Amino acid sequence: MSERIRYHLDENVSFAIAQGLRRAGIDVTIPREVGLIGKSDMEHLVFANAEKRVLLTHDDDLLVLAHRGCEHYGITYCRKEARSTGQIIRLLILLYEVALADEMKGKIEYL
Image (cartoon, rainbow, N blue to C red):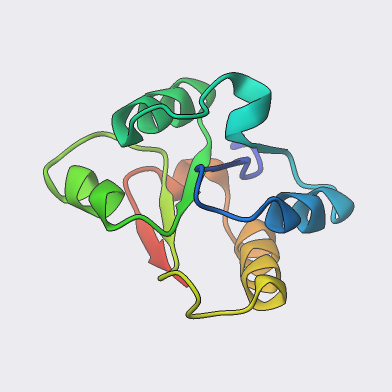
């Protein structure tokens, strides 16, 4: 049986998003808590893969890595300032409610 989605937020994503997801009971990691401050996009991707986490980013470079064939357990992308913090939280909660972790592997969701 597949597990629920767990998220990892990259460095450019607001901590308020992590707080909102945690209030909803969703497992989320942030760079500061896992020693990834100042690390490369690839290092964030490697961490998310090892933990089987969907990576949330505002960074186009992660999309490039994914399109070049880098394995990932799902990427959610939202262009910076395209949506409010509340909108992003609601969309991530919706994704959490309708998809399982295995279903996200290799997929990119644009918020």
